[in-house]
Length: 51
Image (cartoon, rainbow, N blue to C red; front, side, top):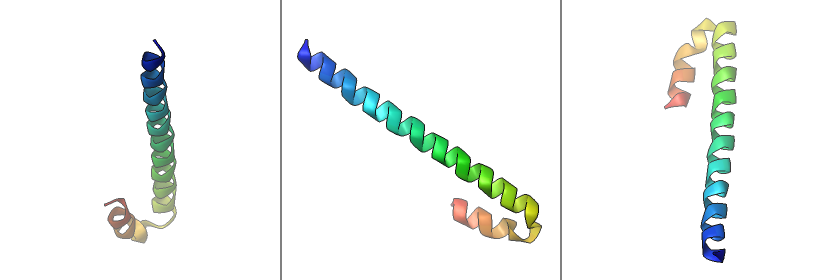
C-alpha cells in the first residue's frame, strides 16, 4: 500500500512540473506575441528564439 502511494506521489510531482512548465511556455509565447506586435521587424529574431 505504501509503495502505491509513493508512485502516486511521483506521478503527481511530474504532473505538477509539466503543468508549471506549460504555463511558463504559454507566458513566454504571449510575451513574444506582444513583442512582435510592437516591433514587426523583430519577427524573424523571435522565430529563431522559438527554435
